[in-house]
Length: 242
Picture (tube, rainbow, N blue to C red):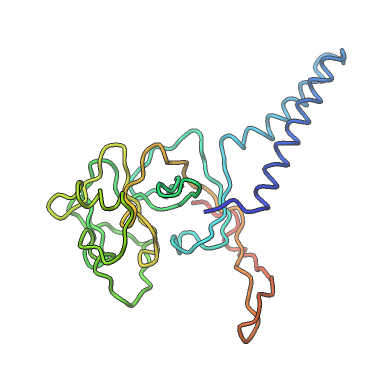
């Protein structure tokens, strides 16, 4: 996921406005203004800036969580108070391989869980998981992706190799303490724990709770020409709770 320019600009504007209102209130207090006149300005600054601490906005740039989250969805993530990660929760976290990036996936396994995938069906602790949100779009089989853990058919991150070598028991991945196994809902097109290993407890950022805006990607001109730059708002996804 990424911060879009409008989110960055909006966040910066709120921070500046909050600071200005706070300074205005402090100035009134220092100049001996009528008692109580400074507090509305200070309270206004708190109302503007405190949400920046507890809530963070992101834009979904890829389709790995379709159809739960679509490309162009703008989401709000609750950072504080921190939610306890539970099975099947959607969570935002720092990508362990490149910590400059943030990912959003579904938590499939919590510490102690045994996970395996057989013919695209996820089994947790020996029981098939009911996943109405899981999407399978590729008509082409992949032995590693669809039957996990197994012999990799592609290059994996070092942490994924460590997972396969040290955390597989009787054909199941056993999630270690303070780690989580995550998958994208678009199972056939998701870079997730199958390819780069577990997510550490300290890398979890927060749980998305609202889609506050959503728009289609720019349309293409007929004949494969350049993008027209026209964006269409998905009104049916506005203010959708997650």
